[in-house]
Figure 1 (cartoon, rainbow, N blue to C red):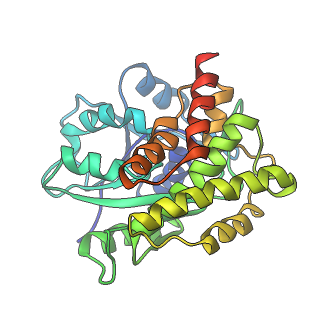
Figure 2: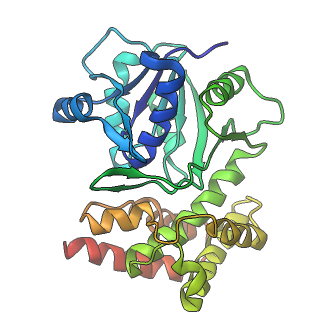
Length: 304
């Protein structure tokens, strides 16, 4: 199995970084699926990633001329339903889907829409892409972790995606247990993303402000407790491993949710604290930190 045509849905800060590498590797076989005025802006202006122009081929949702071997989603969770409609004409029975969305619900939503296709779990770990007036600034491109739920034996589809990423120079890792892996990232997002959105803190502050560091670990512990109740083997060591990783990020870098708040955009709080609260009620696990963060972030949005 070989992946030739790859489509991306979600030309935001993180999607642009992956687009840069895939364009260099497979040229016009890589496309961004986008419609309306957004399609025109991407075609005419593209974006600069660390000063390097990235101007991908654009395929509009109405087009029937392009079929994707792989579709990568990097949209926000609340845009996923529309994105699933936008890719319909680019999909055939062999198309593989890969979600790099935050949270732990996107893969199941994609599978529900395309039950007969392979839908892989995936996350972008350690990428610190931030959009500013000059384009995208990214100190650390991080690693795409992906695969089936269990990758003890790699499927042909996973091998094909790995070969694509290797060829494009995209750091990647096929994790043996992707359920545990996505919950580890969920723990990180629920803590640093939400706390940064509330406090305005950049990555460096989580290491230099003791109270913020303590809050981060308390939120992580809440998610670890919930994951363990659901049979997912997260540990305190995972929280401390992330704290070490934080030291490699741009200290002034901002989480995606903080960027959303500063730009007065809708956040993914429903897929972070909202999901934790829902899972907590189902499992009988108290979630006081997420209860309060949900209210605070919804208040911030309400004050835009």
